[in-house]
Length: 350
Ligand code: ZN
Image (tube, rainbow, N blue to C red):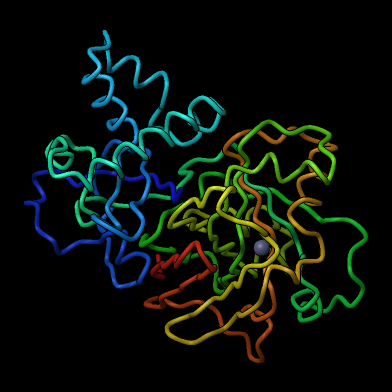
């Protein structure tokens, strides 16, 4: 499944079609409006076929099913079986996952039947234009980054010998934004850079996991931009701060569940800045593959459902150009990963 976290556009927006949608986010034509507080919901994207690209509200789909079955207190049951918060959903493990799959299958079956309930009126199947996408995991418990995990990038940053073990760092969870949102260059920095990365979302608790078992702890994968203020990261020794500014962790557009990724080390990964291809690599070039990163980190710390690992960036960052090419107000940054889609964000000067 392609899971998303979304917010329904409010009726007071007028129901117009001028704002962003998932299909547009994936294609990269949208301007999303993130104003106002809306309830975040767990959704799944309908695959090619009837209502392709629409979003299924999974919790609501289960609620409608339970209501048909005359179950008592269907809302409480649906909330407990299939929570709408992504991290809570992941924490519930296999039972919630099964409830999501069954509800999704029921909706896919229903959209093909003329005698099925009206799923649009029931708020179960939402036209893509009627939702805003958020980061799939809007507030991870922790975000772990990996320094120099592609030899090409290590080399362009002046390091010839590959590291003996993964070099991990932490990035603040409060830096997460979703597709279509703005990367804001803080007034305090003049050297903001992009890093296209495959992001791993942990699905089950992991401590002392063997390399061979590590991928079993993965819920799925999404695209990430590990935005970095180089003037803080490098010259001032402020690695944490340079990685953790507000808006410096765009994630999305979808969480592609692990069962749909046969090999996370065989994905194409690109970064396009204002129409220019800057990074173009494959995940097989990682020095430490996803399984080793998880196993290594889990020897020292517990990885929890909803934690995110950013797996490192390949060559082509702005800092490696001569002269360096930092992000500027008005830039549009796309991170594209095969099967996951395009994560587009707009750059704005604070
Ligand atoms: Zn990075």
